[in-house]
Length: 135
Image 1 (cartoon, rainbow, N blue to C red):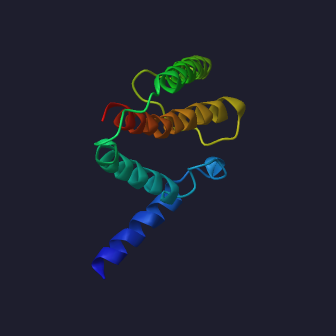
Image 2 (image 1 turned 90 degrees about the vertical axis):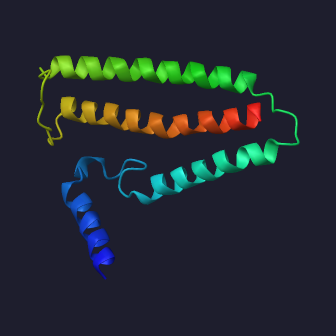
């Protein structure tokens, strides 16, 4: 009973402090999709070496090169967005309160943060590819 109340209170807090501007964005409204992705990642990382134990490594050189180029491009884009938006918004280096308005600059920063979050989810695939390549 106490565990259920604790879980319910966590969900309520997440819903109350959630940024309503980003609710329609993928992987934002609920923690369930990201939780499923992380569990799939853990399963694949655990199963990858076992599945590949008696098999030849999969040649993913071209896929990994294209993946790395895409991630460099995404990182450059995110760096530009964070730098430009923080410069234009006169952000402080020490602390900056969250601007929940729907003005263009705060929404631009929110989008840059979402791309950063999505890049972390995408980067999970790197480990999965390596486990199928090396084992």
